[in-house]
Length: 184
View 1 (cartoon, rainbow, N blue to C red):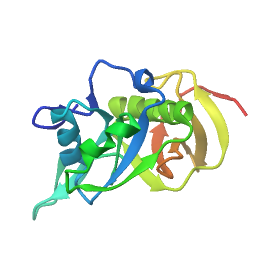
View 2 (view 1 turned 180 degrees about the vertical axis):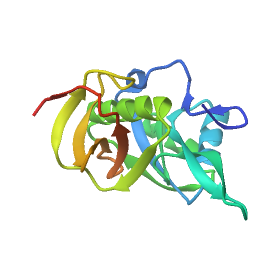
View 3 (view 1 turned 30 degrees about the vertical axis):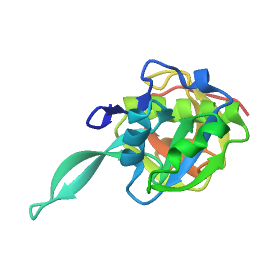
């Protein structure tokens, strides 16, 4: 999945998120500047992750749908860099602030789950706040092995993946046939 000309959603692309464990930070950027900041980091060779998802948007007089790629967590971008090197980011006018990630392992696990869902499914909804509920693990389907919280809305089941650092939750509609195991 590409962001702008030449900038991938993860840089370096073949590097797992766990490889940068202990160095993750979150940058809060000005509105609609996530992709520009990702390109800025890409051009300087700085490791980053910007989760993207495909969104249907009505466009034009006839209300036709167009599929666009948007950042999953608006206003935020994750990057891996030593604290001493943060001065490399200050020459961009897109930066609002840099936020320290206290629990690196939990943060990386949450990002990996969200990245897996965003890569495989299109029908995502991002809501503010964290989702309460029973923790489950999906045993079948394209999201097999994913851990999240199950939400039931009448006949449909939804998987909620919360990222505590952003205080946001990604909701995914599950097939009725999806097998789940309750963890807690």
